[in-house]
Image 1 (cartoon, helix red, strand yellow):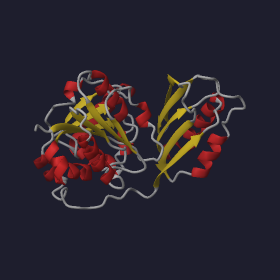
Image 2 (image 1 turned 90 degrees about the vertical axis):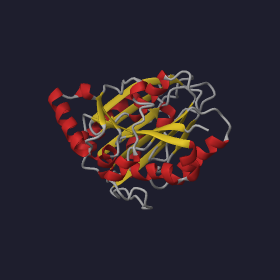
Image 3 (image 1 turned 60 degrees about the horizontal axis):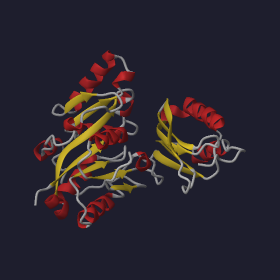
Length: 324
C-alpha cells in the first residue's frame, strides 16, 4: 500500500495559510484531499472560509495541534483512514501559534500515521508586512526554522528593499528552505505539493531532541477571545469601533478575524486583521435555513475580554437582519 503524501501548512497568525489552502484546493480538481484545519480559539472561523469542496474538511478548535489537541489530530487522521473514503492527499493547516516540532513527531512516532502517511513538506507562510515584529515570538521562529518551503507572502505591500532584507533574515534562520515571494499566496500547486522536500536528517540537525517527548507551552500573556452574537450588527457602528480599536491596541492584537451578520446585508461579511491592518469583503449569501450570527476571534497579548465584548455589544443594530 503506497503512503498518502501529507503537507503541513504553518505560519504565524495572519500570514495567509487559509488563503494558500484555498488556492491549492482550487487548483486540484481530480484529487480527493483530506483537509484538517486547526485553530487556537474555540470559535472556528477558518473552517468556514475554506472554499466549497467535496473533500473531507475536519476542524480542530480550542487549542494547538502541537499541544492541547495533538491527540485529536492523530485521532482525526486515523478516523479518516478507517472511513474507507478515497483519500489521495492530506493537507494540514496548523494554528498560527503552533510549534511544528511536536506535529512532525506525531507523524514519525505514531505507528498508524508513520505506516500510512508520508510527510512531503513543511510549508511555512511568512507575512512580509509584519515579519520583523512577529519574529519576537518563539513560535514564528520555530515555524521558519523547520520549513522546507517558505512562502514570503504580501510582498506587494512592502518596498523591494524590505523584501530583500526579510529574505536575508529568513535565510539566517533557515539556510536550507526554498523561499518564494507571493502576493495573496498565489503560487502554482506544483510548487507546493509533491515536492518531496521533507528530510528527517535536516530536522534532527535543527533539533536533535525533536523525537523526544516534551510539552509545548505558549506565552501566557497571549490569549484568545471568541465572541458569538446572534443579533445583527450595524455595519457603520462596527466599522467605526473596529478602526478605533486597532488604533488604540493594534500593536498587541496579533490576529482578528470574523464572519459577520449585518442587518443591511443578505450576505455574510468576512473580515481579517493583523495588528493595524484590516481587510474585509462580502462573503456568500446566508442560506434560507441557516442560522445567522456573527462569530469573531481576537488573539493578542494581554487583551481585555470584557472591553472587547462590550465593544461588539455596542455595535448591535436596531434593525432586523435582512431575510436571506
